[in-house]
Each structure stands twice: as C-alpha cells, then as structure tokens.
Image 1 (cartoon, rainbow, N blue to C red):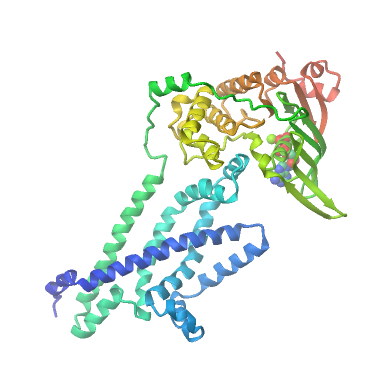
Image 2 (cartoon, protein in one colour; image 1 turned 135 degrees about the horizontal axis):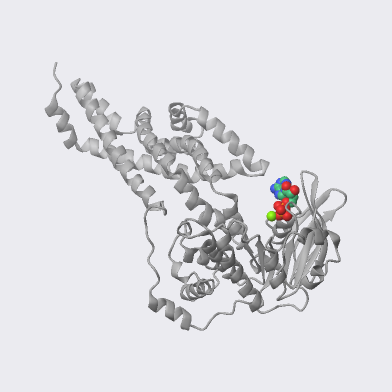
Length: 506
Ligand code: ADP
Ligand code: MG
C-alpha cells in the first residue's frame, strides 16, 4: 500500500477543514483569553490575605487542575439533564466546549500568573500606592503590564496546548479538525493520509500563533535595542519659556503640615517603634538620622500609610489621615482617609520607577489616573519638572537606560507631579555610586530652598546638617533628640555625640 499524495494534497482544498480550523482558532483564542482574565482573578485571590478569597481560589485551582478535561467536557455538555434551563447555552458544543476549557485552563493559567505576580518587586505596588493609585488601578496600570511580560512565554505555551486540546471537544460532537478527519476516513479508509492532513492543519495553526505571540513578546520587551529619541530643541525651549507651575503648593493650614502622635509599630510582637511623636511645619525640612535598624524606614512608611500603624494617629493639615481606633481591650479598627494620600509624596531608596514606562509616562501615570488636568497641561508640567531635575533630555528613555542617580531624579520629579504638601525621602542616595550621590542631593537641596516641606531619612550627615531645619535622632524605635542642627553640633547629648563622632561635619 502506498501513501496517496494526491488525496493528501486534495484535503487542503476542502472547505470543511478550513471551517473546522476557524472553529479551532475561535475556540482556542476565546478559551485562552477568558482563562487569562479569570486566571488572573484566581491568582490574586490565591495571593490574598483574606481567607474568604484565598481558600476558594485554592480549592478551585486544586480541583480543576485535578480533573481530566475530557470528563469535564462530557459533564458540562450533559448539564442540561440536571438543569434544563442551561440547555440554551450548553446545547451548543462550541459553548459547552468553551466553558469546560475555561474552567480547566484558568486553573493552570492562575498558576502561571502567580509566577508573573511573584516576579514583580513589592516596591512597584508601593510606589503606585504612594502616588494615590488604588488597588484596581495598581493592578491594571502597573502590575498586569509587567506580570504579563514575564508570563507571556508560559502563556504562549499554554495557548499551544489549548489548540491541541480542542481536538477533545470532538467527543461532544463539535465539528473541529479531528472530527472532519474522522468523518472522512470512516468513509474512504485512507486513515494515514487523512490524519497527516489533520496533523498539518494543527501544525499550521500552532506555527502561525507561535510566531504572532513571539512578535508580541518582542514588542512588550522594552529592553530590546530601542534607542530613545531626544526631545527636540524647540520642545525644550518652549518648555523653558512656558510659565512655570509652582512646585510648592499653597499651605492650607496654619498648624503643622504633618503631625504624628504616639506611633507604635511591632513586627511579630517585637516593638520597632515605641510611641513616636513628630510634627513638621509647612516649609520645614526635617532629617531623620540614627543607626541601622533604629526604625527610620518604618517611621517614614507609617507616615504615608505603606505600613499599618499599631497605635497612634497621623494628621495632615490638621485633619485626620491615619488612625487606629480602639474599641475595648483587643478590638481595633484602622481608619484611613485616603483622599490625603496624594498630599504626601514618597521617594524610595530603590527608586521604584515603573520599568515598563518611559520617563515621561512614569511622571504622567498618577496625574492622569487622578485626572488632574488636560493632557497637554500635564505634559508641560512633566517636562518642566524633568527640566528642574535636569532630566528633560531623557524624557523618552526607559528607566533601564538611566543611571541610578538619574533614576532617582526622575523618581523625585514623579512624586512632585502630584503637588504633594510633604515629600518623604527614605535614604534617597544610599543605593547610588558615590559619584552619583551629589547630583541627587543637589536636587533635594534646591527643593528645600524652594520651601517644600520634607522629611528625609539619610546617612549623609553633612547634607542633613546643611539643609535641615531640624534633625531627629532615632535609636531603638524612639526619638532620642529632635533639635535644630546647631543644637546637635553643640554635643549636649552623649549618644548623638558618639554617633556623629566618626563623621567630620563640614
Ligand atoms: P532603619 O530604616 O532605621 O534601618 P527599619 O525601620 O528598616 O530601620 O527597621 C527597624 C526594625 O524593624 C529592624 O530591626 C528590622 O529588622 C525590623 N523590621 C522592619 N521591617 C520589618 C518587617 N516587615 N518584618 C519584621 N521586622 C521588620
Ligand atoms: Mg531604612
């Protein structure tokens, strides 16, 4: 017996096969896309701290990953026997197939997403939160675009496996490629020729989509050899000519811009902050110094609500921002007036720029989200702020194309875009090469001179003594002294004296 090549090639002119291919493409794409969306919700559920979310998500993933697709297909298709009303949808093999595939695939894809989510540094979500972006916005604007990039190779793999799994839907009599082939060879017994054609159709579909998804992967990979244009000289000049937006917002209140009272924080029953009080007036620059582990970062993270306080309260411009309400001995409720969140800008030690966005889009993300102005207005403001920190030429680069010092200057401009009343800095220069430290300190010093209210955690003692109105010295979660720099220099406090001993203050 020989292979009937003529018959084999004739199968590529058969409309039935092409229609069946279209069905396979529709079914597989719909299953894949729906599973990506549903899988993401499941992945978030599984990661959630809330038992009501994570337990159902875990059970779902465990159950549907254990169930063979074939069993599920037959089950879903026969559902109308128990729920006759479902027959309007499930009588169609396409819809029944789609539902069964999504139920099953979303459980696998949830785990792929989880890998993607775990790869996104915690600082990304924190940076977005510090810009006042809420949960859904953070997922949609910051996390998903990055997580999808990481997950895409695995998702492509999953798509290919879905294409092949569609052949199983023939058991519930969907006319897909395998079914067309089976019908043919039961009539003419040319099994090998027909199945070779069936195989060729699958290989074609997989090849085409594999290619397309690779293109998407390359497109989303911002690190691949795209060199950025520079803003034109005309743009730079027009930015410099335009009237500057004031960086310092109008003080809204006579009293302290920020007032923290009795802040407590413990991790695993170990007290990290014990009853810290601090007050910062409008236009004041306060530096926080002290040995490592003394609670400086914790304090600054409490101040803008990135970490939940265990007791105490924080007021902004005299109105409550964060507070822990105690009811009785062990019941308490954390209260956040999140509308104040954007009044505090935060600059992190590790910059936390959004790597998938260009510099200019890093600046525009939050103001656009908060609908703070028209597109052209916001763009002008962003260019002006970039100019102020000396980064206008780099506006269209991606963060990975910048040095650490440049990234930190962009991060400062990004925080300023929200016109915060208070800027918090957590060791803004300690992740930088020594020669990049000064360019960042210079920017902060200029802001101090303009009268922006700032709280700066720093180990740069000369800088702290030069720019600060007050210096807070912390040790073991307590404020040891809180005084003007001159007073600290006088060396009245032996502990501060000892800490400063090794630094030769200019
Ligand atoms: P600093 O910024 O002054 O170096 P931190 O505020 O980072 O100090 O840390 C103060 C103390 O709190 C340290 O002992 C640190 O180990 C502890 N700590 C900080 N964050 C956590 C956390 N998420 N879980 C447990 N312990 C923590
Ligand atoms: Mg720290």
